[in-house]
Image (cartoon, rainbow, N blue to C red; front, top):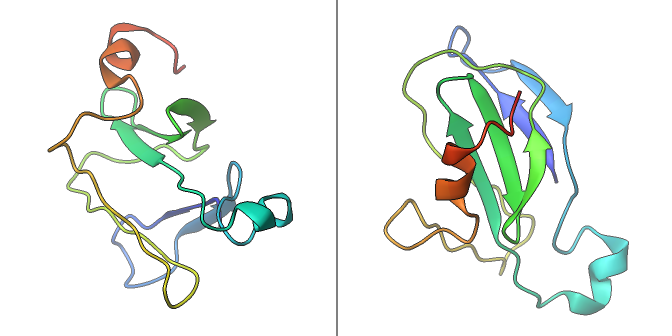
Length: 109
């Protein structure tokens, strides 16, 4: 749904839930005819700046407005309907987004 959800672990539920970036997949009316299209969604953590950033099809979408604390994090994926699928790349394959270039540049402030 393109939302940013963050919970610092202080409570079992709740936390920050904000609209963020574009939505993709079946929920986009302008993409309805491309229902079978494949999207590559990326999520990264800039640990030095405590920022979470998102990419779509190899392009930077933006940075979440909430800064995150140091700690351990786990990936989470939400699908919209039965039959939806996702393939996760947690670093075993090259990323579509140029993460090396990202790390070498001061683009997130």
